[in-house]
Length: 333
Ligand SMILES: NC(=O)c1ccc[n+]([C@@H]2O[C@H](COP(=O)([O-])OP(=O)(O)OC[C@H]3O[C@@H](n4cnc5c(N)ncnc54)[C@H](OP(=O)(O)O)[C@@H]3O)[C@@H](O)[C@H]2O)c1
Image (tube, rainbow, N blue to C red; front, side, top):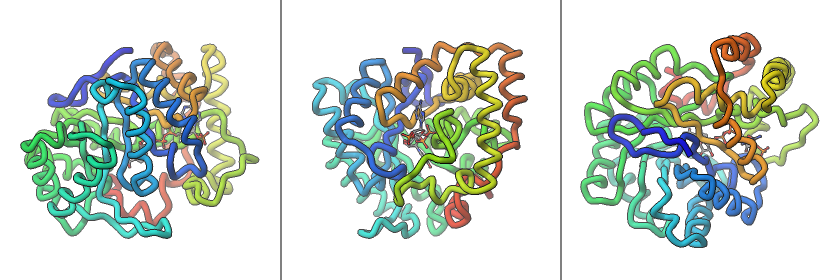
């Protein structure tokens, strides 16, 4: 497995990370046994970066990771666990904003450590900036946990260039987790250049645009009512029709190279720079195996031109979240 380093101050990790969110939440029903088998297959393949959030199924995703690691003695030491916190939930599955107060940071971390069955989190980050709390206070509280040995590195999620600068002036930041794909290129204008200037790496999520850009999505595919994609503008109505045409254009280019749509989409993100680590949202072993194949895809200049002609930078139809969720994105201000 090739490695990439998370920013100037972060750890070396596998060139692909495994995002575990869909194994417990967000994309409808999942299968715990298959999810654990997928985590084991990822570890076997050399993937060490595992991403979760304490609010993914209200702690169940962390418990799933704990169980997967416990079943493989020695794997906690191999794994680099990245945890997002801050989202406020309720028992009905609702969302109630974000809490980035220092006391909340300490509280969230204590619960995560217990659920994960570990004495430290490798990368800790607030999922969305709490507008009521200066980022310096939230990052400062995580920095105290670094001092105490309960966190190894500080990350950020979905923040804009200005917040990146303020956070980096407070404490060393290893990476920014943010959506980046052929369908979501918003970071290229100012966020990515600022991260590079500050020596902050990028862990890219939504590399397959949550499955839309995978080559496996069809209009006929049903989703259960809890699936995020039911509320995603890009998966609805005319937006979906237009976006699937882009996927078919990419399929033609991918097939010309002898690879799948998902592999072409992941290889494109990998090609954007050594400072970018795609997080793969596979929740089944077959999807993981397909994603791993992207590591062997070399896109030369003419391939890249063909890929970008098939999916031009601003061609996607629809915003990446619904209007209520867009309001929480510091990165979209
Ligand atoms: N910081 C943030 O705000 C934020 C937000 C979202 C996610 N994340 C993190 O990023 C990770 C990845 O995000 P994501 O799940 O949205 O990314 P993604 O990789 O764009 O989408 C994953 C979905 O694509 C489908 N898929 C089809 N072919 C696949 C293949 N070969 N490999 C993998 N998936 C394939 C699967 O859906 P089906 O199984 O339904 O086919 C899968 O659940 C998450 O697990 C989470 O840890 C962070």
